[in-house]
Length: 591
Image 1 (tube, helix red, strand yellow):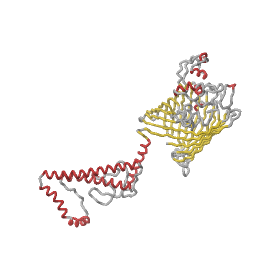
Image 2 (cartoon, rainbow, N blue to C red):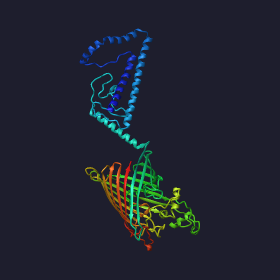
Image 3 (cartoon, helix red, strand yellow):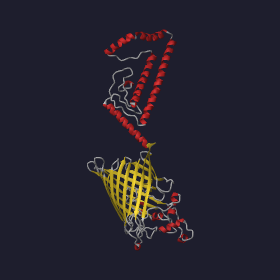
């Protein structure tokens, strides 16, 4: 009712304003407005009223007659007075109309304005007029006559109502889009609350592991399209300084505050639909959140290039990437004798990683390139096949292992942050030539990967969609003589888009100790070691609403190989370690 009253006042003020504005030139010119012809019935009804008011009418008409008999100055003065009076009335109506417009805008912003259900009113709340104008500039309002015609109310047609509804819907979408952006910046992110529980009993091979903790994760994305060809991205996130494999921060440290990091930042240039160039700190070119070669939270510094071409119902992409992990800036390592002295330089730590004395310490890099082919099939293209083949080459990977040791992280970690880290970079697990050493058993890491993924989106129940995915990964390190293979199989069904939606996933992981670099692979599939394991993963998700889901993940982990001194092979968690269980229950909030 309040919305209907506001709208009727809006229309009434508009009509009065039009009447006064159109009357002003009539008065100025000394003319009377032309009324439309009346029907015979209306003429008969008005005859008696005219006779009864003849005295008043003659008195009113006498004024102009007297004015005409006066001097020209008096006539001009009288007209000025009438014009001033009408202008004052027009100004009052204009102010009232402006007030009503502000009221409507405020009601629209607060989401309280509603469209009337009465088809004879045609009320629509809008920031700009949506009632069409009649010919000649008069306002055509359904249910209200023109300025001089008190005719019957004109009903609103169905086409008009549909047009009004579409405009209101479009306005609602526009307001929603504006709420997501600020001066072209788009904001998004997520918050996760996690219960993380690790259990392993002790035996003669390895000690016990028990850690029941609460953790939180925050990620905030800021995106800005500078132009049609240039995009920029920034992500801020929680986490710790010395663990690049997670954004989680523990409920710990008494009441101290947790830090916020620049976890992603890049610029992207795409001159056309076929080419894409990116540089900064970003996910790897072949990152797929599969927990196989790469952890889903790992981000690399470097550059990426993509060339894509569509064909029929598919596409092909050629990807290449170059990443920088260290920049030692050591021109020449000290001699062995100098490093054996009482006060050796900090750079002597590189000797333990196999870098020769007297030589420059090179940077550590990774070059990854490959191809991704995606095709769709089926009547409605419900089936999607994706094939991936990529090959990653590592340069000087021993620096990665050195950064995970107490002797090496002050050189490799502290120099980057400009601060003193509390401990080494996490992620140990590969075979090394000595127990706890800084040199990998594998001569090099030249890792080839093959991936096949099948998606089907056609299954639906009476209340939700059930997309199904099958995924297979195989990898081999061609730079290692043994324990160089890895594989993974995973199946998932369902999705969580609203309250009550369900999703399931099962995965099996098999990663030998020399197959990939432990420090960058998943640290949930492998707890205490990223490789030398076989793990079963079981996951169940329940949607609580559009923006929140309850996720449950169980990992069951066993180690594969033990130490083999004859082959210079030592691992931190050898075979024979008791089975390890890890459960993660978490609430995921997205925005």
